[in-house]
Image (cartoon, rainbow, N blue to C red; front, top):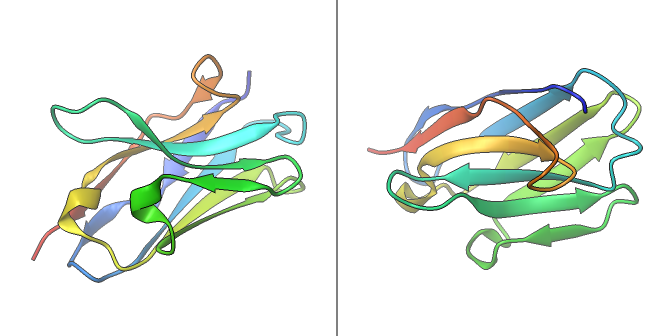
Amino acid sequence: QVQLVESGGGLVQPGGSLRLSCAASGPIVGIYYMGWYRQAPGKQRELVARISRNGFTDYLDSVKGRFTISRDNAKNTVNLQINILKPEDTAVYYCNGGGPDGSWGQGTQVTVSS
C-alpha cells in the first residue's frame, strides 16, 4: 500500500474555496479508485468524491457542482477543488486509495466559518 499525505486545509469563510492535495509515496496508476472522505465531529466518515483510474468520477450529492476531484497518475497526486464552501463542509478530509480497506492519509482540517 502507498502512503498518502494531504495538504491544503485551513480556515475559510463561507463561499470561499480551497484546494486539497494528496501526494502518494508510490504509483497510484494501479489503484482503481482514489477518493476523498470527510469526517465531521460526531458523524461517520463519508465518501465525498472518488475518481477511477480512467477518470470517471462520483460525488456525494451535497457537493455536486461545488467539488471537483482530479488525479494525475504520472505525478501520483489526487486533488480536490472545493468551491462555494459551506459551514456544513467543516470536517477532517482524508485522502484514500483503494477504498475503505486501502490506504489512508492522516487527514487535513477544513473549517468553514465567518
